[in-house]
Image (cartoon, rainbow, N blue to C red; front, top):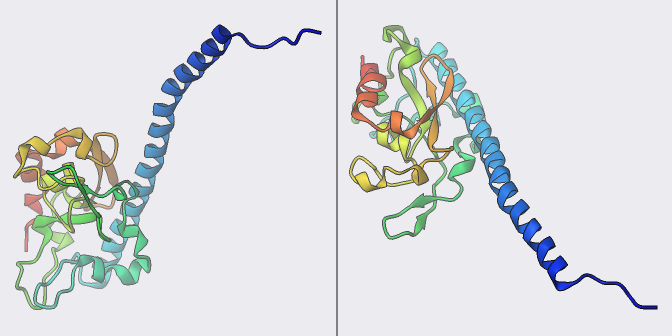
Length: 216
């Protein structure tokens, strides 16, 4: 009895269909994975924001800051409220920080940064934290966010997987963001929000959502 098999044309058609389905589904799977990482990052920031607010309750309504004199920084000060160092790592930063030559530098252990204007002047001893009671619009002021370093300006938030984009305009590109062309931000009232990099990475954003926090 003659065995019946697939013809070459039939095999090529099946392969073509599989290739088309893969081309359709792989981006969907990739977006789904990134949505999961984005959600994890938002959860991290929410817990960090809560730790900031708990710290403020214990320290006369003042948020944690840092001191170059004692080499103690905000992430050290809120650790007793978190008891977990993994929260400081954004899952989308695992790929590292892109460099101008195309190489990748490890992202380090702290992937979030507080708004730069929340810092006590660098040589305060003891450090003086920003007073929540003096903030007029805490829901509009950046507390902590996806960032290139542990201190954040607009560009460090907008393009945290690149070097400082205000110094290198050519790096103001979506590929240097962490979460679907944008990044996550926790504001001083404790809420967390995703914003597009084009909105974050500007002097207007810096002057409206970061600088007004500098009240001592």
